Image (cartoon, rainbow, N blue to C red; front, side):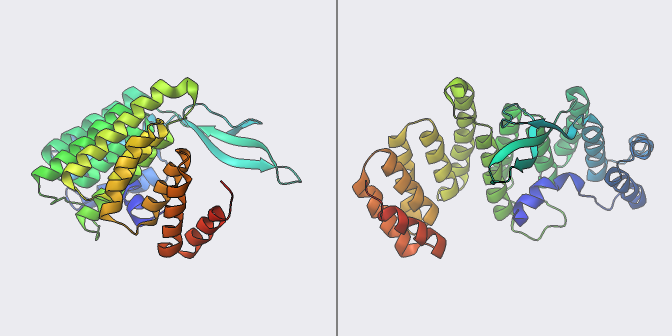
Length: 310
């Protein structure tokens, strides 16, 4: 997992130096130890205080999200790959031949009303401190855990819109990465999370269309902010490819190629799209470009494809 992803996923655990640093240290430790009684005692003290620092809102947010967790650990087993929402695969079982023989999995669940209390707290924090990117990323992370993909998307769009207002001057404590870097790579990860929810099956076509639409909305807004963002151009292409609209995918990949003509991901997506269009001459053209510009692994893969008969 890269540094940016870690930053996005650990945003819930950031603490500052306001009202009684010790109490926030104690609260943080209680969460890490899963000590609900101590957490409850401390959060009541925090809520009874007149502290309105970012730490207060983050602590309340963490508390309610933590106690909303109703997840089950790796206690279930199935021969078939589970396809239910909220499933987390813990172990893949294999037989003596190396073939997959089953799965051990857990189920991720949250009590929505309790989690909503946390969202209410972080919304108050965001209203008071609109440029705290850690708060916003924490909220997005929780909305993803709750499978609230519309709310998830709406919050991402609010982050992008706020970036236009604050001229990319975000506050992100304990972080040394440039704000632009954090924003672009984190939103790319959020786009991937949305795509991972797509099952790309006939029976899920309507649900997939909604998720792919969310991805396009995010990518469109990112391109307004960063017109040469090839990540968002690639995302646009991926959504059209997934929907079977290969010609629209090509339009976006060609735009990305103009910005980054040697980018291997763009070139690979172009080769794949031409293959799916059965335009093998153009597929070959882009495979040759991968051989020319790619890393050793990409070059080897492209060479294997070039040696196959079409």
